Image 1 (spheres, one colour):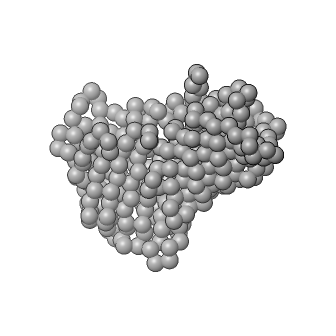
Image 2 (cartoon, one colour):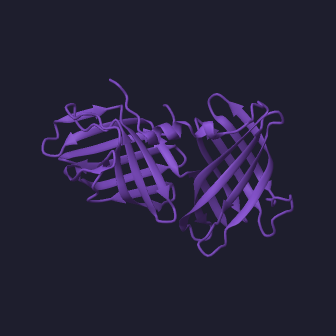
Image 3 (cartoon, helix red, strand yellow):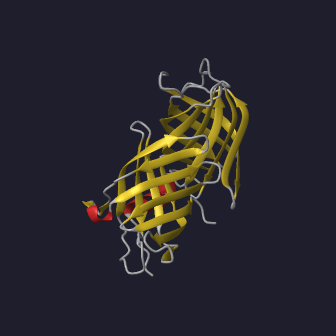
Length: 274
């Protein structure tokens, strides 16, 4: 079967191509729009905030610098800081990883940023997917991911809502989310969308206007009576109801379910090949 990829998934596949090393194999730089899921240690409450992360990967000296622009609470001003000279490791199975038990962030001039200490920092860049976590001042636990998440390895089961014996399985569908922290919203993009064997595969199906909520383990995304679009055209005949997705930080997994045109769709997807 021919595989159809929407422009969304092509763009995600090229994330790493946005790196720049000026043909010098000793280093690389990259920038990513991300979302910080922030947990207040004292109460366990969670929030999410847009963030920009810039990485300087020094392969020759096995170190990395990370520049962050974000905030950690709704009432806080945005701050920009850098953490420098983090030990950098690499392997084929885990990609690039970096850790630091404690580090003092600095500004662009190298001066320590007053009032900030970063502890328990760890991060990974694998298959173009960036994630990292750290604690700020012992007060805010931060888990950061890209605001674009593509679950390109997925198993989908479609069950007829009137006859549970009619089941269709699909391993070609791919699920991509774009999260908007400022609006608490998300959109789902599907490649190879096919809900039964006779349905032509759709490469540009989008579920807009979903609601995203940070949780203790990642994000929950919900929606009801969503009119999807296919290549930008609304299709009311494919009305989406009871949409629920859970995105898990630790396992890089997503579980997705919704109903559409008399079908119940359930999927488990992963950010990396399994």
